[in-house]
Length: 223
Image (cartoon, rainbow, N blue to C red; front, side, top):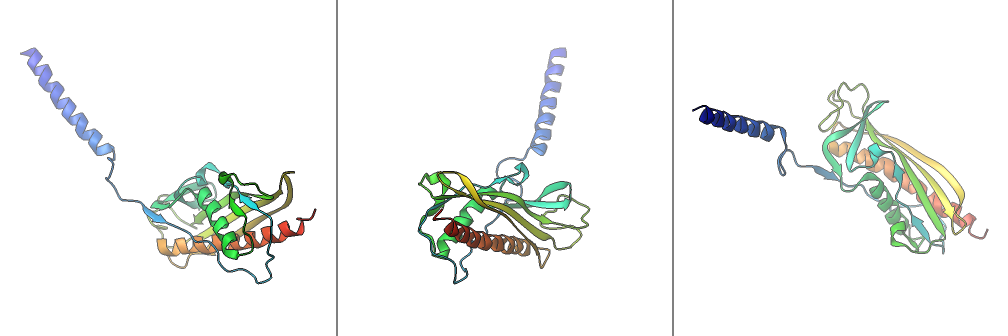
Protein backbone atom coordinates (compact mmCIF):
# COMPACT_ATOMS: atom_id res chain seq x y z
CA UNK A 1 0.00 0.00 0.00
CA UNK A 2 2.85 2.38 0.86
CA UNK A 3 4.55 1.65 -2.44
CA UNK A 4 1.34 2.34 -4.41
CA UNK A 5 0.84 5.62 -2.53
CA UNK A 6 4.38 6.76 -3.28
CA UNK A 7 3.95 5.76 -6.92
CA UNK A 8 0.71 7.77 -7.18
CA UNK A 9 2.29 10.81 -5.57
CA UNK A 10 5.18 10.49 -8.02
CA UNK A 11 2.79 10.56 -10.99
CA UNK A 12 1.03 13.64 -9.60
CA UNK A 13 4.35 15.48 -9.08
CA UNK A 14 5.48 14.61 -12.59
CA UNK A 15 2.22 15.92 -14.03
CA UNK A 16 2.49 19.18 -12.07
CA UNK A 17 6.12 19.62 -13.14
CA UNK A 18 5.23 19.05 -16.80
CA UNK A 19 2.48 21.66 -16.56
CA UNK A 20 4.85 24.20 -15.02
CA UNK A 21 7.50 23.58 -17.66
CA UNK A 22 4.97 23.94 -20.45
CA UNK A 23 3.91 27.29 -19.00
CA UNK A 24 7.50 28.56 -18.73
CA UNK A 25 9.02 27.28 -21.96
CA UNK A 26 8.01 28.94 -25.24
CA UNK A 27 7.52 26.17 -27.76
CA UNK A 28 8.47 26.63 -31.44
CA UNK A 29 5.70 28.42 -33.30
CA UNK A 30 4.21 29.93 -30.15
CA UNK A 31 4.28 33.59 -29.21
CA UNK A 32 4.09 36.65 -31.42
CA UNK A 33 5.84 36.20 -34.81
CA UNK A 34 8.72 38.53 -35.61
CA UNK A 35 8.07 41.50 -37.86
CA UNK A 36 10.87 41.88 -40.41
CA UNK A 37 12.05 45.23 -41.75
CA UNK A 38 14.46 46.15 -44.52
CA UNK A 39 16.30 49.37 -45.41
CA UNK A 40 17.06 50.66 -48.90
CA UNK A 41 20.26 51.64 -50.78
CA UNK A 42 20.82 55.10 -52.26
CA UNK A 43 20.25 55.70 -55.96
CA UNK A 44 20.71 59.46 -56.48
CA UNK A 45 24.11 61.16 -56.42
CA UNK A 46 25.73 64.46 -57.49
CA UNK A 47 26.31 64.83 -61.23
CA UNK A 48 29.97 65.77 -60.66
CA UNK A 49 30.76 62.47 -58.94
CA UNK A 50 33.94 61.06 -60.53
CA UNK A 51 33.86 57.92 -62.66
CA UNK A 52 36.65 55.58 -61.52
CA UNK A 53 38.46 52.60 -63.02
CA UNK A 54 39.78 51.06 -59.81
CA UNK A 55 38.19 48.24 -57.81
CA UNK A 56 36.77 48.44 -54.31
CA UNK A 57 35.92 45.79 -51.73
CA UNK A 58 33.65 46.55 -48.79
CA UNK A 59 34.30 44.73 -45.52
CA UNK A 60 31.60 43.60 -43.10
CA UNK A 61 31.42 46.48 -40.60
CA UNK A 62 32.53 45.89 -37.06
CA UNK A 63 30.22 46.86 -34.23
CA UNK A 64 29.65 46.44 -30.52
CA UNK A 65 28.05 43.14 -29.52
CA UNK A 66 24.77 44.90 -28.72
CA UNK A 67 24.42 46.01 -32.36
CA UNK A 68 25.69 42.76 -33.89
CA UNK A 69 22.18 41.34 -34.10
CA UNK A 70 19.08 41.34 -36.28
CA UNK A 71 17.08 42.90 -33.43
CA UNK A 72 16.30 46.62 -33.70
CA UNK A 73 18.16 48.48 -30.99
CA UNK A 74 16.54 51.08 -28.76
CA UNK A 75 18.15 53.28 -26.13
CA UNK A 76 16.06 54.56 -23.22
CA UNK A 77 18.97 56.03 -21.28
CA UNK A 78 22.64 56.81 -22.03
CA UNK A 79 23.76 53.64 -20.23
CA UNK A 80 21.15 51.10 -21.33
CA UNK A 81 20.56 49.38 -24.67
CA UNK A 82 17.32 47.48 -25.31
CA UNK A 83 15.45 46.15 -28.32
CA UNK A 84 12.06 46.93 -29.81
CA UNK A 85 9.62 44.10 -29.14
CA UNK A 86 9.38 41.45 -31.84
CA UNK A 87 10.74 43.74 -34.58
CA UNK A 88 13.81 42.53 -36.50
CA UNK A 89 15.93 43.46 -39.49
CA UNK A 90 16.08 40.92 -42.31
CA UNK A 91 19.78 40.36 -41.50
CA UNK A 92 22.12 41.23 -38.66
CA UNK A 93 22.82 44.96 -38.71
CA UNK A 94 26.53 44.82 -39.77
CA UNK A 95 25.83 42.57 -42.79
CA UNK A 96 22.92 44.76 -43.79
CA UNK A 97 25.13 47.84 -43.54
CA UNK A 98 27.70 46.05 -45.76
CA UNK A 99 25.17 45.12 -48.45
CA UNK A 100 23.57 48.56 -48.74
CA UNK A 101 26.81 50.47 -49.53
CA UNK A 102 27.71 47.90 -52.21
CA UNK A 103 24.30 48.39 -53.83
CA UNK A 104 24.63 52.17 -53.45
CA UNK A 105 28.04 52.16 -55.20
CA UNK A 106 26.53 50.07 -58.01
CA UNK A 107 23.56 52.45 -58.27
CA UNK A 108 25.91 55.41 -58.66
CA UNK A 109 27.05 54.07 -62.07
CA UNK A 110 30.54 55.47 -61.40
CA UNK A 111 32.35 52.27 -60.39
CA UNK A 112 32.17 48.83 -61.96
CA UNK A 113 34.54 46.93 -59.70
CA UNK A 114 32.81 46.86 -56.32
CA UNK A 115 31.83 43.94 -54.13
CA UNK A 116 31.85 42.39 -50.70
CA UNK A 117 35.22 41.34 -49.31
CA UNK A 118 33.95 37.78 -48.84
CA UNK A 119 33.87 37.16 -52.62
CA UNK A 120 37.70 37.32 -52.69
CA UNK A 121 38.26 39.62 -55.66
CA UNK A 122 41.46 41.59 -56.10
CA UNK A 123 40.95 45.17 -54.96
CA UNK A 124 42.74 48.48 -55.32
CA UNK A 125 40.97 49.88 -52.28
CA UNK A 126 39.34 48.42 -49.20
CA UNK A 127 36.53 50.19 -47.35
CA UNK A 128 36.50 49.38 -43.63
CA UNK A 129 33.60 50.65 -41.56
CA UNK A 130 32.51 50.56 -37.94
CA UNK A 131 28.88 50.93 -36.89
CA UNK A 132 29.11 52.96 -33.69
CA UNK A 133 25.49 54.04 -33.29
CA UNK A 134 22.45 52.43 -34.88
CA UNK A 135 19.47 52.75 -32.57
CA UNK A 136 16.21 54.53 -31.84
CA UNK A 137 16.59 56.86 -28.87
CA UNK A 138 13.59 57.39 -26.60
CA UNK A 139 13.73 60.40 -24.28
CA UNK A 140 12.06 60.31 -20.90
CA UNK A 141 10.90 56.72 -21.21
CA UNK A 142 10.20 54.78 -18.01
CA UNK A 143 10.40 51.38 -19.62
CA UNK A 144 13.08 49.48 -21.49
CA UNK A 145 10.83 46.89 -23.12
CA UNK A 146 8.59 48.81 -25.49
CA UNK A 147 6.66 46.51 -27.82
CA UNK A 148 6.48 48.83 -30.81
CA UNK A 149 7.69 52.20 -29.56
CA UNK A 150 7.92 54.31 -26.42
CA UNK A 151 5.32 53.59 -23.75
CA UNK A 152 5.03 57.32 -23.02
CA UNK A 153 3.90 57.97 -26.59
CA UNK A 154 6.83 60.14 -27.64
CA UNK A 155 8.37 59.45 -31.06
CA UNK A 156 12.07 58.57 -30.83
CA UNK A 157 15.04 60.00 -32.68
CA UNK A 158 17.09 57.54 -34.73
CA UNK A 159 20.86 57.94 -34.51
CA UNK A 160 23.20 56.50 -37.15
CA UNK A 161 26.96 56.94 -36.72
CA UNK A 162 29.44 55.12 -38.96
CA UNK A 163 33.20 55.54 -39.11
CA UNK A 164 34.79 54.78 -42.49
CA UNK A 165 38.41 54.18 -43.43
CA UNK A 166 39.59 53.96 -47.03
CA UNK A 167 42.64 51.71 -47.36
CA UNK A 168 44.87 51.55 -50.42
CA UNK A 169 45.99 48.07 -51.43
CA UNK A 170 48.31 46.25 -51.40
CA UNK A 171 50.14 48.70 -49.10
CA UNK A 172 47.20 48.59 -46.67
CA UNK A 173 47.73 52.25 -45.91
CA UNK A 174 44.84 54.42 -44.68
CA UNK A 175 44.42 57.33 -47.07
CA UNK A 176 41.26 58.82 -45.54
CA UNK A 177 39.14 58.41 -42.42
CA UNK A 178 35.88 60.09 -41.48
CA UNK A 179 32.83 59.60 -39.26
CA UNK A 180 29.36 60.10 -40.67
CA UNK A 181 26.53 60.80 -38.23
CA UNK A 182 22.87 61.64 -38.69
CA UNK A 183 20.00 61.98 -36.24
CA UNK A 184 16.50 61.77 -37.70
CA UNK A 185 13.37 62.36 -35.63
CA UNK A 186 10.61 59.82 -36.18
CA UNK A 187 7.43 61.63 -37.24
CA UNK A 188 5.13 59.29 -35.35
CA UNK A 189 5.32 56.79 -32.53
CA UNK A 190 4.88 53.78 -34.84
CA UNK A 191 7.16 51.12 -36.30
CA UNK A 192 6.56 52.32 -39.86
CA UNK A 193 7.65 55.83 -38.93
CA UNK A 194 10.62 54.60 -36.87
CA UNK A 195 11.88 52.38 -39.70
CA UNK A 196 11.43 55.30 -42.10
CA UNK A 197 13.68 57.37 -39.81
CA UNK A 198 16.29 54.57 -39.84
CA UNK A 199 16.09 54.48 -43.64
CA UNK A 200 16.51 58.26 -43.87
CA UNK A 201 19.43 58.42 -41.42
CA UNK A 202 21.32 55.50 -42.92
CA UNK A 203 20.55 56.71 -46.45
CA UNK A 204 22.15 60.08 -45.77
CA UNK A 205 25.25 58.36 -44.36
CA UNK A 206 25.42 55.97 -47.34
CA UNK A 207 25.24 58.81 -49.85
CA UNK A 208 28.05 60.67 -48.07
CA UNK A 209 30.19 57.52 -47.84
CA UNK A 210 29.86 56.81 -51.58
CA UNK A 211 30.77 60.39 -52.53
CA UNK A 212 33.61 60.51 -49.98
CA UNK A 213 35.05 57.15 -51.09
CA UNK A 214 35.01 57.84 -54.83
CA UNK A 215 36.38 61.37 -54.41
CA UNK A 216 39.21 60.44 -52.05
CA UNK A 217 40.06 57.22 -53.88
CA UNK A 218 40.31 58.97 -57.23
CA UNK A 219 42.42 61.79 -55.76
CA UNK A 220 44.99 59.28 -54.46
CA UNK A 221 44.80 56.79 -57.33
CA UNK A 222 47.96 58.05 -59.05
CA UNK A 223 50.06 58.04 -55.84
